Amino acid sequence: MISSLTAFKQLLIFALPIIVGHLGIVLVGTGDMMIAGRYSSECLAAIGLAVAVANPIMISLLGLQFSLSPLLAQKRGRGESTEKYFMSVIVYSLLVSVASCILTYLSSYFIHYFGYPEKITSIIIGYLKIGSFSAFSLCLYQGIKEYLQSNEKTIAANLTALIAVLVNLIFNYGLVFGEFGLPELHEIGLAWASLGVRVFMGFVLMAMTWKLFKGPWHVDWSFIKEAFRLGLPISFTLFFEIMAFCSVTLFVGKFGEVQSAANNIALNIGSLAFMIPMSIGAAVSVKIGHAFGKKNFQSLKTFAKVALSVSIAFNIITGAIFYLFPNFFISLFSTEAEVISWGSKLLFYVACFQLFDGAQVTQAGVLRGLSITRSASLAVFFGYWIVGIPIGYYLGFHKQMEAVGFWQGLTISLAVVAVMLSVILKRALNKIKEEGTYVSTM
Image (cartoon, rainbow, N blue to C red; front, top):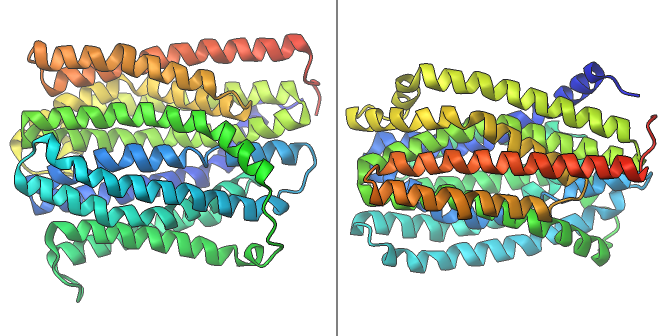
C-alpha cells in the first residue's frame, strides 16, 4: 500500500520536469506575444488570431500522441520492454506530422473569409504558411518526449523546452527588429522564429536519444493502431476545448484590436497557469497507467486523490493572485491603457475558472491512464459547445457584453466539464473496485 505522502513525493518529483517543459512550450508562445505587443497592437492582434487558427489543428493532432505515454506505461506495468516500440512511436509521430502540416497550411486559404483588415489578414496567412512546416519537428519532439515520459524519464525533453524559450526570444526579437545580425523581417519574423525554435527542439531531443534510433527498425502496426484508437478521443477532446477558446478569440476579434489584444493576453496568462495542472495530469496518467498494468487499485486511487488535491490547491492560489493583481500581469504584455483596462476585466474570469480548469484537466489525466477517453471527449464537447459557447455568443453579441460575455461563457463551460468528468471518474473507479480487477497491495 502506498501512502498519500509517498504518492505526493513521487508525483511531485515526476511532474516537476514536465511542469518546466510545459511552461517552456507555452512561454515560447508567450514570447511571441510579448515581442508582437512591443511591435504594435495590430501585430499582437494578428499573431493571436493566427495562433487561434493554428492551435486547434496542431495541438489537437498532438493529442493523438498523448496516448503514447499512458499506453506504454501500462505495458511497462505488465513487465514488457518499451524499447521495442520506439521506432513505432517515431513512425506514428511522422504520420501525425504530415496531417498537421497539410491541414495548417490549407487553413491559410480560408482567412480572407473572416473579414479582418487587409494588413492583419496578410500577417495571419504568412504566419500559418511558414508555421505549418514546423509540424514535423514538433511531432518528432512530442513523440520522443512521450516515449521517455512513459519510462518516467522527463529531464531531457523538458529541459530542451525550457532552453527553447530563450532561443525563441532571441530569434523573435532579432528577426522582427533586425537585431543580432539577423534580417529585419517585421511581423513575419515571428513565424520564422517559431519554425526555427521547433526545429531546434526536435533535433536536440533526437540527438539525445540517438542510440535508440540505431536499434532495430521494427514497426509494430498493431501498437500504432492501439495508440490511434486511444488517442483519437483525446485528439477530439483537445480540439473541442482549444477550438472553444480559439473561437472566442476569433469572435472577440470582431470587437476591435484593443479587445482582441486584451483577449490574447488574458488567454496567454491563463494558459501559463493551466500548464501546472496539465503537467500534473500528464504525470498522473503515467502513474495511473503503470498501476493499471500492475492491477494495483490502492495505488491507482491514491495517486488520483493526491493529483486532484495538488491541482486544486495550486489553482486556488493562482485564482487569488489573478484577482488581486490583474493590472500587473496585463502590463507585462502591453503598456496601452485601453488594453490594460480590458485585459484586467478578462483576467477576472481567468481567476474565476482556475478551480474548474485544474480539476478537469487532472481528472482527464487519470481517465487517460485508465484508457477511458471517449466519455471524457463527450463531456468536453457538451460543456463547451452545447452549454458555454452558445451562452457566450448570446451574452457577447445579443446582450452587448462583447469580450466579457464570451469569457463568462468559458467559465460556465469549465464548471460543467469539471462536474461531468468527476462523475465519470467516480463511476469508473467504483466499477473497477466492484469488479475486483485490481489487487490492493504493491
